[in-house]
Length: 503
Image (cartoon, rainbow, N blue to C red; front, side, top):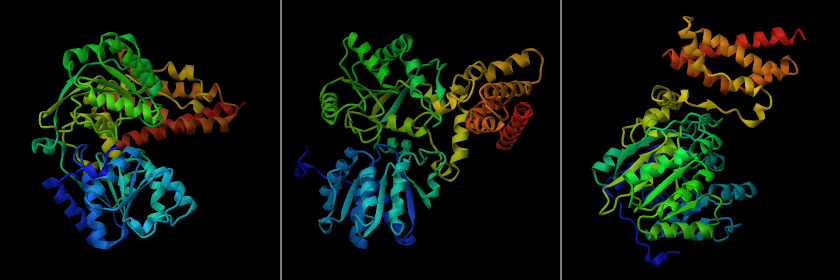
């Protein structure tokens, strides 16, 4: 544990000071019930900024500030910065059951789940809160807390103002987005290290898309756990990154363990880390990584937020993702600037750069906030020809209700190409797809109503397949796709009714 007395407050950069002034001004001008979302790239110093906002808010309005995080490391990090700038604060962890001493503190930092449990028992667990600050605001777990603070201002901060759940856009809860400095601007001004990007073509055939819209862990394990992908990873590391402190991001635990074994055999200093580690083992592993020159750390879903190791020189994406947020979080772990570190290396083994563009590229975050569906569609359909390489993986409870052998045997791109080769119209592929979905439902349905319920449950599967068709014909306007979906479902219902009602 770092002695708080030895913790030096971080001095604000000019752009950070300016941001604090602008946000305080927004809160002042818009009054209560105004919720503001602030975007700043990973490495831009969000904790320093909202700690200073907390200090100035308390001084100006004489109300308490509540800061919400989803990782204990972020809570401790924030508490240290607040203490260093003279803001009395208390971390509400699982051990804090009551707050008899709350008059002694102006600011509280809480893990979202812990606070939610306390508020369910006592809605007035923390009194006189004027401002709620939400760190990593793109996560939807914070929304459950908002109902308790409807009279307070809410300030969300995130590097990527895109909700983790497409059905719950951030503009439902935030009145306005303030866009901070861009990645390229922070690099140019010397606040962030630049990324030198190395891409390797990989065959992602076999990846499946889950109901959350990203590639499933199980299919990623199959693709990345095989010998050839392990060899490609080792080759990329030895070609680009030997002798550098390296973070490897994987999708699954089995893959990461295998990566560790592969590198150990070659004599490299490497350790594996995942979310199943105890706090003690995790701390020991991170200390080893920090203190060991040229160390390699291979991990799964644990170092994307709340982890700060400026000495990282290489980031390896040994996985594919369809999440722009995750893409930026992973790369951002290497972007910390040091006196002797102006650049870091990025090795992409998941066609992620092809999918999202370079990490430094300009992104219209205002468009993402105002029109999230359109924004995601344009990035994932215009740029991503990967959908031809992947299958859609049905959730397990639905797989029991359809004939999966029938569904798995159909490939829209292959069928479309066959139709064109035979001189048929491309639309014939849609008819054959409809017949395929019909058989998959019919073979397992007990009656027409059972079939209708199954049809409702496989809408995302139908949507995925028809999107593949629109890519084949290079026609993907929203109106055309909507027409296609409505016609397809209507004809599928008619076909099921005609056969199942006769039985």
